[in-house]
Image 1 (tube, one colour):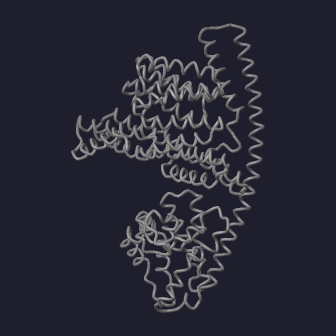
Image 2: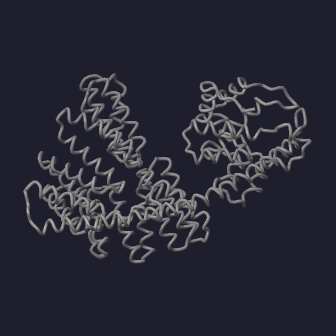
Image 3: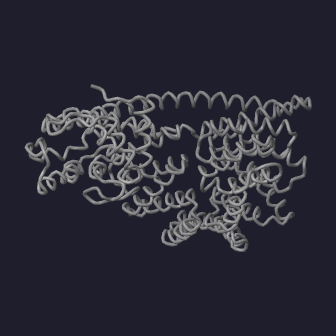
Length: 607
């Protein structure tokens, strides 16, 4: 863990022990925002928690600058998670407050943050415009450190637009300022960006030289996270040189550092790089292990860009293995998340944006200085002509994408209906085995879906848990009917027979390919939170969340339904059982969601 972060956390703990007021309260606000800004890459959700606490305190104290800083930090956190609409909302609030205060540095920082959002969306013209505004203000207040940062960001935009000549121009200006000011951390960043530039040019030797310069400075500064980034970059060059063994060593060294730092964003990124190289080496099992780890982390921390990269690599993995159905499913997830089906951000789109921006700039210059230069006007007209041609090409491409997307959607709908039909058929087969529990699985599915919805699951995961719930007891088809419907207490042997149904269900469906983890959830749906369940005695988070939800829904349904061998305990007794055993037998978050939708939202089973 970063030492400075530890120091700040201890300082914050002391501040929280005292009532906030006056300068002490403002200092606490500033500390919360400083700590949040240090964590936004690795812990974006924790950053937002600090920022929200800071925002509430700022409003209570009437501390307007702290309020602006808090809103800006919430925007940064949302941007890091790919929540761009939310981030812009908070940036606009912060911008309004900074403007009221006449805080130019705050305004410039907001412009820079907005530039990051637009750059992440591929809206390079808007990103460039905001970075330019930030640079103008930093030049006005003579903040050289921030000037160099803005120049570097502008260079990044031109590099992404493949205008390497202009990118180099801005990179070199940033590098010069950092050498002048002795900003070693910034200088390491400049060397890193020069390495990326030369890599883009295809000059791998020069790129490697700059990466090694950056690494040396980061080692001198003790910048562990920066060292990790340099290792990854050097690994990238070695991959391009097809030197896979040393590349893997650099990638693993990078991963080791970020694991030590508990930087989950970088851990996820490193696992993607290792997964990619394992695909190249046809080491598919290792590739899958790295990519599944990355995906799990990226979903947990809300890093949607990394999540989309995982889906893309998983699609490539299954394509390489010849499993085209899974390859397509992961590519569909990637496409829906990034909204870039079949490379919607095509070279034509990027070129059109570049031409439009430069055309507008030259038109403004012409109007401002009354330039009548014929050559300039001819160039503008030529650019407009090229832009119109690119627009026509893009429209044609969009039509093709729409047609292909429609075809893919039709295919997916057919596949989805086939899978759902199979699930429904299996559910009916199970109920025919035990008519006394008719409708049990459907009602469990209904409640499980509501609990998952309350917990914030997306539509795809809600559909998954509903479908899995419909067949969670499929293993009971092998249990003798006289045992299933027998009134009174079962013998020890009979109980052991019943306890085999999760494993039997798993064995039945483990070789069937579903778009959801059906067999695994069925195997775990009788596991309990404290490890007292069966068949494997799993505990806590070792049990899949879907299985934890079904376990609670199963109890509620069973206790509210008639059985020939007992009276119906009823919904109030069922809820009391769940509350008493929350955190013991049942996941506390699942239990809370279940109680809420029944007691507060009036959920009841359909007849």
